[in-house]
Length: 380
Image (cartoon, rainbow, N blue to C red; front, side):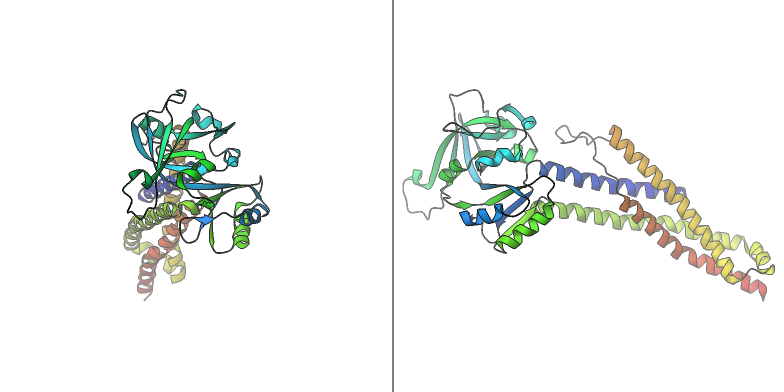
């Protein structure tokens, strides 16, 4: 029972860690990613015609449609340089509240003021380029390489260059903080010569709307030329890896449970051999083979259930303590969270209990048959 309890508790803890990591990834990505994203099914860009935008805006549950141009560019500030991801967004981007005020650590969350354009830069970009938000002497220079076929001897014709004043610095998640520069859509159009082309459209749904239903309606409205993706589908590969890791952890858990159940098998086998005399007495007073089989099956089930029950309790207790007090730290100074994220799911408990019950019944059947044979031999 102790072996079963320890293995069960370990499995619950491991599965809870994977659940916690999955939730952490969703929380971090959802803080910057749109609720729904529309991309071209083929190619990098598509034409954002007014008719397309009106169709999407007319879908019930759609609150805001933000046009986006996103591509790599070369950034320069006061001599320092870095390759960044420039994200050009339409004016309603701020209304989506994707960069909340509490995530602005310096400056203001603005992209336009009067006739001037401003950039929001990640804190990692700010540190790399040594950007001073309050210093109006220097501007952020952005260079975009054209898709030129070559043949020109003038290097200036191979790229476009525009300047923009940094308006604020945001801190959300490391990947975004170290790479992204958010600029007005018109600025990105001129820098990258995209014209009416867009790399994506980002949707904010109405309060109380079902995101999956809105996603399906948009897909039906605009057709298969576009991919309509919810928050999880935008990082499908990442979440698939987490699910695969949890699957393999589950398979390893089954193997551990089987190993733990072998103890039950040998315990019951030794019990059957040790209790030959008692089996004979039971047989003499009228116990048939079916009854004796049930006795040993019940013995195995009791051992498994008590051990599994204690294991589930201990595992739940440790996970709860981790949630409340962060007993185990990530051990990284630059980690997003201080301690390992964990989350308990009822299905994990039912999964462990179900597997243990099935394995126990299968393993207990052989000793039960052996005990019944002893009764049959004694009877003869």
